[in-house]
Image (cartoon, rainbow, N blue to C red; front, side, top):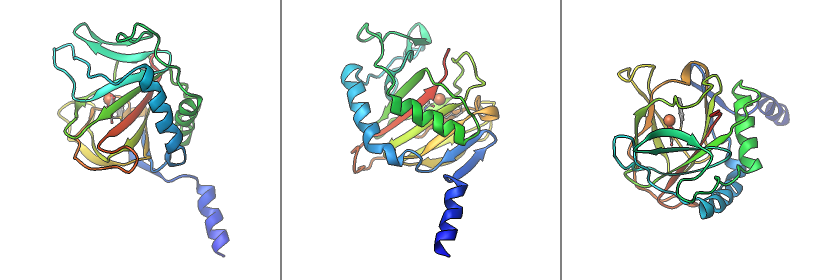
Length: 217
Ligand code: MD3
Ligand code: FE
C-alpha cells in the first residue's frame, strides 16, 4: 500500500510549482548534486575570481560575479555584453562542467523546454546586503530559449514582476537547491533580488550563490 503510493509520487516526478505562466520552480532539484556543484564552483573561481563589475552608469554592483562556458556576461562603462574572454585575466572563461550543462538541460526539460543547450553560465555571489535591482534579461540573441537559475547557500527573496517596470511584483523565497526555469511569457519579465539577509549556511557560510544558465548567442 505504502509502496503503491510512493510509486505514484515517483511517477509524478519532481515537485513542479508554476510561479507564473512560463516560470516553473523545481524545489530542491539541485539537492543531489550540491557537493559536486560547490566543488566545481571552487575550481572555476580559482581561475576566474568573483569580481564586482561596474554598470554603464558607473555604479559598482553589490553582487560579485564570474562566468563559465563559451561566453560570459560582463558589464563595464562601455555597456553589457557576452564576451568569450574574461577581461580580468585576458583568458577564455573556464569551461562549463558537464554536470552544470546536464543539470540545466534536465531542469529545462522538466519545465517543458526540451533541448536547452546553454552557452553561458553566470555565477552570482551575494553577501549580506547585496541585491539586484529590478531588470530584464535581454542581452541574449534568442529569447525563445529559457533561463535556468540554481540557488545555493543563504535564502533570498526573489522579486518577479511583469513586462513593464512598474507592474506589481510578487515575492518568492528561494532556498539552497531550488531551481527555476524562466521561459515563454516569463522570459522578459522584470525581476530582481532583495537585499540579502544575514545568516549562516551550513555549506556556504554568509553567502548565496546563484548559477544562471543562458543561451546567449
Ligand atoms: C526571470 N539573477 O543574473 S536568477 C541575473 O538570483 C539575475 O542572481 C538573479 O537576475 C539571481 O540576471 C535571479 C533568476 C532569473 C534569471 C533570469 C530571469 C529570473 C528571471 C529572466 C527572466 C525572468
Ligand atoms: Fe536577471
